Length: 205
Image 1 (cartoon, one colour):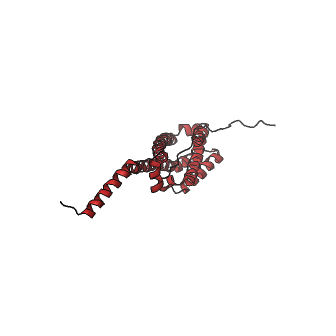
Image 2 (cartoon, one colour):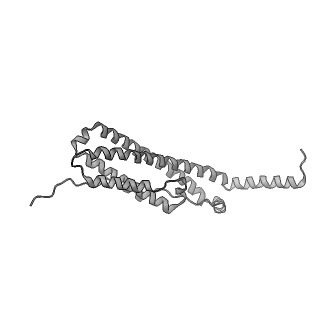
Image 3 (cartoon, helix red, strand yellow):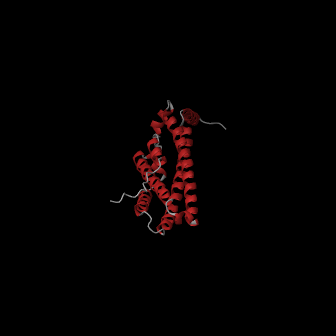
């Protein structure tokens, strides 16, 4: 097929542009951006799974006479705060909103951790098969959250290295590929730290 000179020029320009974009990391940005979105979606799925378990856990614990109400209240409030944040894929492009979401989930993790520790002091709950089943589901979900978070952290690390490296950082500036936020070390430490629970009764005077 014979091409006119203008059409040949346009075709050569398109081929040159495609080669230039590929060499500057444009295709890699597309791939890694989709990878981070996919990893983030899995994080959200696991957090939602945890949120869906909490009402049943709270309902079961409420049936235990004399259970520490402050612990239950903190779990309910923390869940409400965490689920009130609209967790969308766009959240990973907003560092301030991401930090707020992360803090809310960390607070919920701490409240749940305390609830499980406190529940150990109630023999009826320890013997309640329904509560133990919910506990196993919750622990399994927490493990899934950890795995999903780690995958997201790895995906973001790969993306951010590309966004900050030369010459792909020039492509990032041209097409608006800003570095994405990740979970912080401080937040990881807060979540993994065991809660302080004091079951000692004050000395009678």
